[in-house]
Length: 92
Image (cartoon, rainbow, N blue to C red; front, side, top):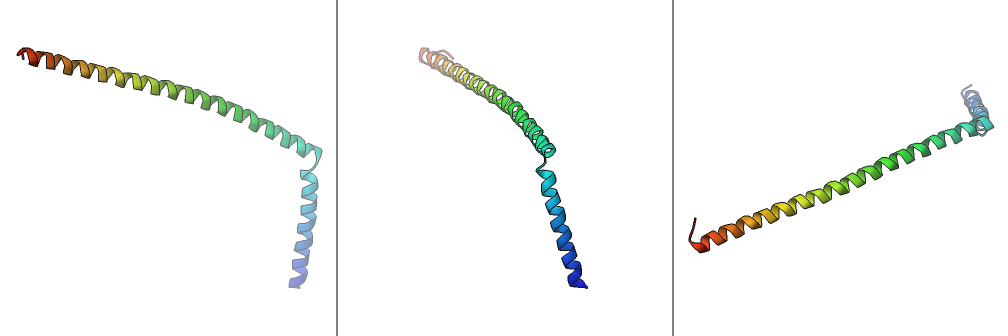
């Protein structure tokens, strides 16, 4: 009896598998696949636009941060130059 049950389960699986392949390869299923793929491509375009915007903003922020550091460095050098001029003249 056990072997008969296994054969029946195998036959049912094969039948459902064959029917499943027919359903998955039907015209309606292909339309669903095409629509899903189109939606994924639209989402990809949207994500890529967002990534580009983020990259551009990150580049702007980085450039501004570099400028801030250069300005601070220049200010610090001016302070040191002013102090050295005062030290040489004997004033404090």
